Amino acid sequence: MNAIKSRLNLLDFDEAGLRDFFVSIGEKPFRAQQILKWIYHHAVTDFEAMTDLGIALRQKLDLIAEIKLPQILREQRSVDGTVKWLIGFHGGNAVETVYIPEPKRGTLCVSSQVGCALNCSFCSTGAQGFARNLGTAEIIGQVWLAAQALGHERNGQRKITNVVMMGMGEPLLNFDAVVPALSLMRNDLGFGFAAKRVTVSTAGLVPGIYRLRDTIDVALAVSLHSPLDEVRTELVPLNRKYPIAELLQACRDYVSDKHKRTVTFEYTLLNDVNDHPEQARKLVKLLRTVPGKLNLIPFNPFPGTRYRCSTQERIDRFQEIVMQGGLIATVRKTRGGDIDAACGQLVGKVQDRTKRSARIKLRMAEITS
Ligand code: SAH
Image (cartoon, rainbow, N blue to C red; front, top):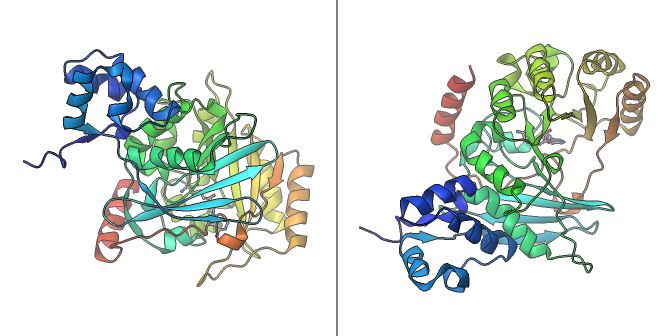
């Protein structure tokens, strides 16, 4: 038997998983807390250096476990401070992770899948096909690597203050790997981010929204893109299965419990497709019934797309109408354009996306139909 192959990667476990792991090897569950601090507070990945674990336990861990991070294949820094990493995984796949600094916060945009199976017509990730889900280690590893690469501010403050699952992939279609990663982001023994600072963005997987609500406290973002089912189905084919009324009901239910959450609606503005004043007015009517805010995203074109970005005039008019209607609406600034780090521009390396991708798309279609 190949000992290396069977080693467990401890980055795949959240605190509950680590407690179970230690119990399963005849150790005390509190070892989980110790090891979490080493990994996420001290950035130590070598058992040898974990001095409070005792030599016998360290040797045992060396035999059966490992702490294996993905690899930074490339780092690009934009003139505006945005940083983009190409992060590679075992087997040749890679995703992109982006850091966006703003005056009062620093947001890390994390990927959940290699490629995406949902095929939204205006998204370049969709155009690349789907290779596979990322594992928990590969998701939390992006945060770990970015935090290390960025270091701290001079005053000791962390550079990353927020994490958004808005990179490549549909996080709610990779629920079982995403949730432990979210739990490590939230846990004080991990990265310790507050619930409102960890956002899961979904194209509208309704059952996933309910499951998320019942599992972990994080912020929700929903990619809406149109108040009209006909238009939304053209942009987000998943809308056929979960049309707008059902999706908004799930959003209302998400925010209705004790956590007092709000939903962020993402709306990518596509010239002459979803940026008409009538759609803005319809949107006002729809979103009045859901506590949340609207994030307007100017479309970022990519090679081969049939869409164009709305003109500044149309963007301004759209924002004016929704704001007059009483919605809170911001226009997302395009960042990192010089290094192709803007929304919908993340590419990574999606391997094996011919037959396998078609097969998985079929399976995804079954799951979502
Ligand atoms: N699958 C999830 C997570 C991806 S988030 C979701 O759909 O929410 C990526 C966000 O960027 C989504 O709101 C998506 O609709 C938007 N987006 C995708 N391609 C874009 C593009 N070319 N220009 C602007 N926004 C885009």
